[in-house]
Length: 179
Image (tube, rainbow, N blue to C red; front, side, top):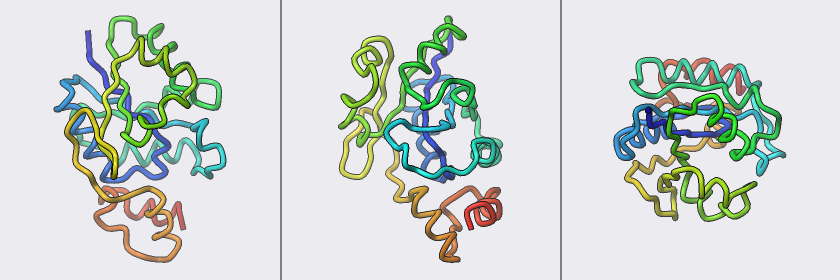
């Protein structure tokens, strides 16, 4: 049985904070793998404009090349939209019955967890590990990296540098795609 951490998000775009968090979760939560679940549409952020699913997926794959134990996953892209965690977990349990999944969520999301679709069922049937966010505690140790996808998109639109905010391997792609 593999212990797999599920780290979902739009990754619009993926940044160094996402990568650091996935690596910390591997170590701190005793996981065998972390799957970055690139989500097509967060039901709580339906007004958000996203880069094409495939492009976000490719950026994440490129940013994670050589990062042991962390893989990019397009699983939710093959499920009905919007992406409800409960539905994803149900499908994963069918497709991977021998694996144990741990949901990785930020302290800010944990504070509003009761707004999630089938939150009680998720809590009852799945391990949950909460990572700290600015102003919110977590259940495991992870670095607080002060960078956001929103800030990266804004900086690109304003022609400002994003060096150090995203993996070096995707800087040029992010600048081109989000300009």
